[in-house]
Amino acid sequence: MGIDKGQTGMDLDAIAPSLVEAGRFLAGQGWAPATSGNYSARLSPDSVAITVSGRDKGQLTVEDIMAVDLAGEALSPGQRSSAETLLHTSLYGAYPEIGAVLHTHSIPCVSLSRWLLSQDQDHLRLTNYELLKAFPGITTHDVDIAVPILANSQDMVALSKAVLARLASVSRPIGYIIAGHGLYSWGATVAQARMATEALEVLVSCALQDHLLSHKLG
Image 1 (spheres, helix red, strand yellow):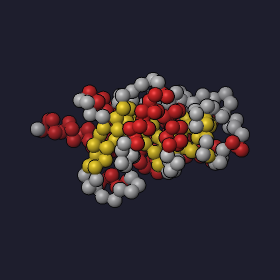
Image 2 (spheres, one colour):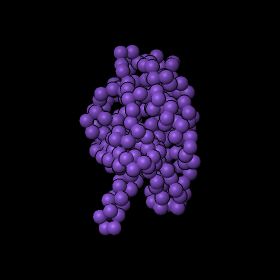
Image 3 (tube, one colour):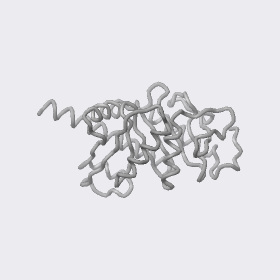
Image 4 (tube, helix red, strand yellow):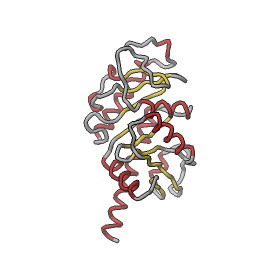
């Protein structure tokens, strides 16, 4: 794939199929319209596998996975990663336990986050949902989880710093949403990140339905 495998701890060819599979699953749920979304996995303490920019995530191949360092600089010659690469690599730098990061663009995440931020609410509160037990360390529905919501920006350096600052203020960070943009979630492995993403997407959909029903029936 055009990278010196000595630069990474895990073989890029070994991790690429799992990112391809995750992309097909997430796209199949309608969470990656057009060419939106990007997916990554840690290769070593200072390198990351990530999707190439501008690809249909439901049609990914292993050739669409490249390597970057934690500054977002390409290690795969002739390939360009997403403009949002720093939103991935900053998480790997700050949280050694993160092994994979998935970014989706679902309608519920985009619409609910826009509305909440317009109401000066900078987080989504999730509580009393059984599905919260899908996340590491949560063993009961009776928890109160805050998912940070941040305003969108094209300045990825500033946005990545803002994300880390918000996550540092959360007791149980399981993901965050960029308003009008989409969800970022993670796990120790690609499989765990995929499960966390699915769970969080469903929880956001439940929260949106709860909001709509409360206004319709209230």
